[in-house]
Length: 386
Ligand code: ADP
Ligand code: MG
Image (tube, helix red, strand yellow):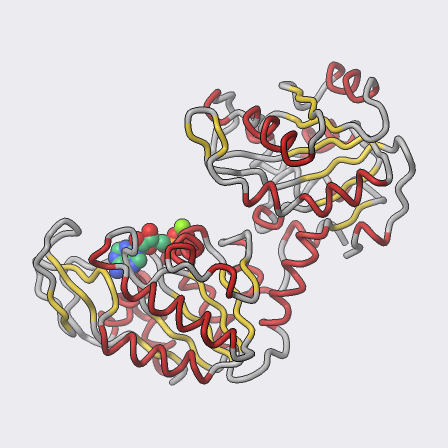
């Protein structure tokens, strides 16, 4: 995979730049511009070469239809402010009108295309859509790490049609840091897993077991393991299909499982009990004190730490302690020289809530993408760039 520094860019040359501007919106305004800001180094580098820049992104899940609330228009204002530069916008994504518009742009100007997922071909990795997009530019650059695990037209079918293609600084940085964890990490290397999207995540444990010395499991994921050990878990999260896998993973001896849980009848209930076996009418919403201590001991010894998935329902004050303590322990260990990497939407929110975001070695912009990279060492969007 080439970096943008490895390719020649001539003044006025047209570049198709796939970015991940899948940002949160409220009443037509961008509420968190982290993802926009992370592409600025790439944009600034490219702008020095004075190409015509065509930016493409998705936003949310419009399912192949125009959904006004998911328009990328609000990004124009924010990006324009950050770069202190006019940003042009095209509601049409492909076709003669866009090509005309692009041809009218001067070197150094930027056009943002409307949400690529308004086109039904995007999520189908449609070759026809790709060949239409191919007509817009001469160079393809991908800086959308958070989307690289998807076989979608603008990240997968499209780059295959270009000879001149490269990764932007963000994509390059993400892969560099994830590789640092995955290939030859300083040991002990540990992964900490939690969260709620268990079906998506249990599968990667297999890959992680080959790389990591230990895997700490808390969050909603822990109860499938508890159940596999024969414990009662009440109404806690469970992924039945993975009970057998969970048993196999436990047999490796590399799993450090949370051994107590803060439980309640519901998230609203103020009556909270610390349990190791959960009655039918209750569910576990955070890890307990014993688990926190056990996890901290492992974290303090580690030299490499990968974290995805909060330890509990940190959005509720009663159940945030586990995630806060783990975030702070990782920050402390990082200060002493360990390498720490975290990814995942809610994981990052919980790190922000703990006030230690700046103290991590690296925060990945991709949740699903970073997990899949940890499992496989590559992603479809990266392969298509090679
Ligand atoms: P990420 O976005 O970091 O990849 P997930 O989307 O998998 O993580 O999961 C995040 C969610 O998991 C959080 O909103 C949190 O409330 C929830 N969660 C964590 N522990 C539990 C639990 N024990 N029961 C129910 N939900 C949980
Ligand atoms: Mg999430």
